[in-house]
Amino acid sequence: MQNWSVMFLAESDFHLTADFVPDSDYLQRAQHRYYRHWPGQGSIPFSILVHRSWAPFLRHVEFKGRACRLDFRQSRMITWSTLFLHMTPGDDGFSDAFHEDMFDVAYLANSRPKRSLLVMAGDFNVDLLPTMVSDPFRDLPGRASRHEE
Image 1 (cartoon, rainbow, N blue to C red):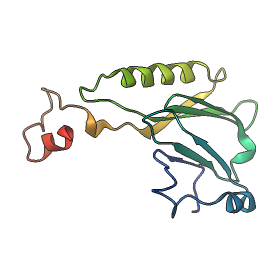
Image 2 (tube, rainbow, N blue to C red; image 1 turned 90 degrees about the horizontal axis):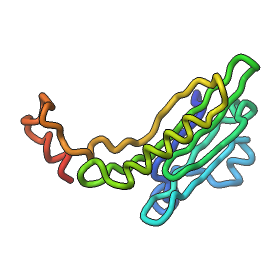
Image 3 (spheres, rainbow, N blue to C red; image 1 turned 45 degrees about the vertical axis):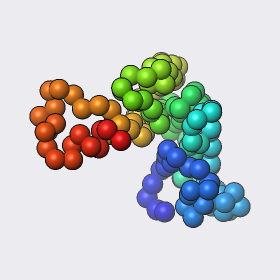
Image 4 (cartoon, rainbow, N blue to C red; image 1 turned 135 degrees about the horizontal axis):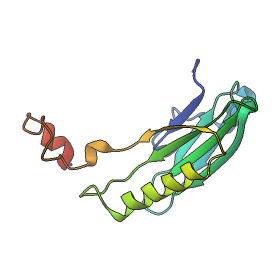
């Protein structure tokens, strides 16, 4: 694992990813920062690994629901926030969980440090959203089946 800064593992259930997630002794020796968050009942935990070369710039970590924000500061003029999300769209694409996710993202984005740039990444589960009527590829074979699972 070289040439990376922050790694987001959207579904890091240790039973499923035991071969991938390093143990805490390795993380201590390698000087990585490791954060794990369980959003609550019905959710799978997610984890964030911060590479040792970026760890000194990490100033704050905040979790809210299925979202997380990391605030970095390299100098007085260079600050940025990275927001991660593991979204749950629901059957119709607009479930209560979807709205909660959007409120959590809005809260974390608005509460970041002033003048901090925002980068957002995550598992948005767009393949679980229903196809749109205006989707030009809607009638292609296999297109709807991906969205009906």
